[in-house]
Image (cartoon, rainbow, N blue to C red):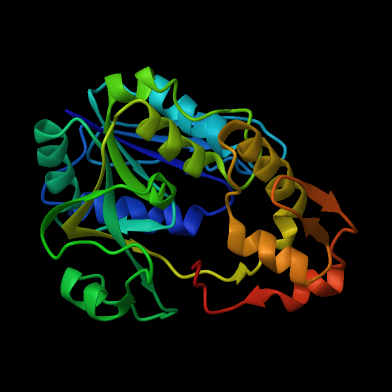
Length: 280
């Protein structure tokens, strides 16, 4: 039995596309849980499978807390976390259900990035043809690949057994806001001997949206969470973003410390807007 878990903040249109993808799936979820942090609550959703919306009032983003709330309210033994921006392929739920039945592991699904289009053909064939693979995270065409670098864990679309999630105590809610919480989860899974596996042949398609690259609008969260991660693990996460902050002379970074020089200006944030929607 599988619970599909999604967290959302002000992305209702993307959520509706995700739900449509679930409804097209070769295997429907046994349960769908949405944790809603939106400024205006999304309200009730109607699906041919059991669904619940749980409202969580927060300031900003609390990704760790929201994912933990979703898992705590799930009733089934298999958990599939899907980012609200992700639309599952026809066979993703079926493939993840089978994978978790066979493997006690942290299993990431192959996530492809979609370009902006208004007249989207939502068939798997069209989505595969019009999407891009991640340049660093490589997935097998079919089956599984054991990934030994826990820093490559990807929270966009992943499955885990409930007892394994509970053994890890979920996501560390000391990570508040954006950045670092998923890498920490991957490191803790590796520390406890839970394998990280990349699954090919079934996909999540990441819907297009504009991004800010580097994510200067999350500057304070990233600095705080990077320092927290370093204190725990002795390595710096999110190095590309930290390097970009160094280049902008927002921070100085040594091997073991960050020094805040200034905060980004509104003009710098506007200049960082990337309309391509790529997040890598």
